[in-house]
Length: 311
Length: 242
Image 1 (cartoon, chains in turn cyan, red):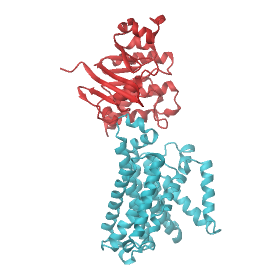
Image 2 (tube, helix red, strand yellow; image 1 turned 90 degrees about the horizontal axis):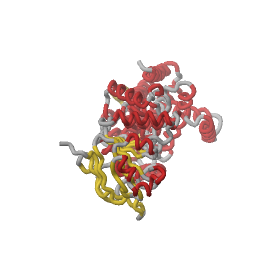
Image 3 (cartoon, rainbow over the protein chains, first blue to last red; image 1 turned 90 degrees about the vertical axis):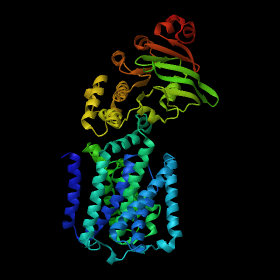
Image 4 (tube, chains in turn red, cyan; image 1 turned 30 degrees about the vertical axis):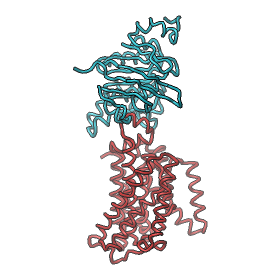
């Protein structure tokens, strides 16, 4: 077994073991962290590996979330087909947005993705009759049952989050090692050179947006299913910035960086808010310090100092 | 019968805001030979090969590769037809290892066949003498070695047409000698279009020479023909050199 595989399986085993060790409150936190880490991993695939900075991923997260939520409450679907609907919604949304936004590069790409996401957010508010607008809607506890398992119980929710995290984690870890992933890294490093090696860089970038957006949507659907709430706040610009911060903190372009970043940020806010209402200030200072002293993020520092082989 | 020319251009023209960088160039590249493209700075050499490889869109005219027009094809499609291109300024993937740089160039051809990939990569690195640096990060290499790496990235594609834009720039004398030996070893295997400033390299390796001046073909022929051409002497080589 390669070092990479050993690392990935150890991370998953560690997360599974933590449930046994951790008190209920922290286990609940960790379930949420794992779901948000799926979102961060999807973002990292595009930002960290392909080198495309999107400011509109909240739209893909929301597409998955509303796909599942409306599927269950509006069409009366059971969780599994509703989950599939959420993923399809995110895939279609990211394909369309990717097709349009990839006509631009750099700062323009950031602005175009941001604007599409804002349009999506406003559409959710405008269609309040169906989406619940600002208030959103709750998915009833009785409906959140998958394969006979009650997803609202602590244990099942934890391991449902773990399973979804593990699937996304392993798929993406595999993808970045594949010829496709290697080509994306090449595009990040030098797009013109990659094109002149005979690769259709436009098609590769579109596929990267679709995979990234679909994983983000899977995270949104998972979040709605496991925590029972669908709301417009998840489509705001804040939720497009979060994955960027998580990935920067944890280490862009590393497989374990997103999980580290979400974990770090989650507990930074959780702990500091116990002491002060200015907890975002603490988060801000931590971010500034990291940018100054570990610009590659925590995972990037690990790779630089300890393990250059880190995938 | 295969055509003698692997590549032809017909009235190929590039205008930058009204200035003609290339003015109606008719050119034919003989299969299996080394052709050098020379000319003073600003003569339009890089523009010309840019239009052949697809990096630069032509204003008008046609490019034929193996008898087929490729003028409408995007760059990556032309590369897929078997045209390899090395950049004038070394353009390797600085953050990746030498091995990965060459592997990226080869993977498009080998797909998921890892064994074939490794054989090709090892062979290409060996031919340019970088085998012992396979695991080094390309950005840490000396400029001369980056140029050699770039040549390996072209070689590994086993191109039928290999375009090299000033490959010996920045190489030491010993490396230039090795490069010339490499070019000669490719003779017959592939067709080479070489943009080169180093006259001794041109005279020693090229089978044919085309001289560009002010975006037009000034002369074309064997090294001896070109050397003896009074127009070329006046425009470029200088009388003392002839």
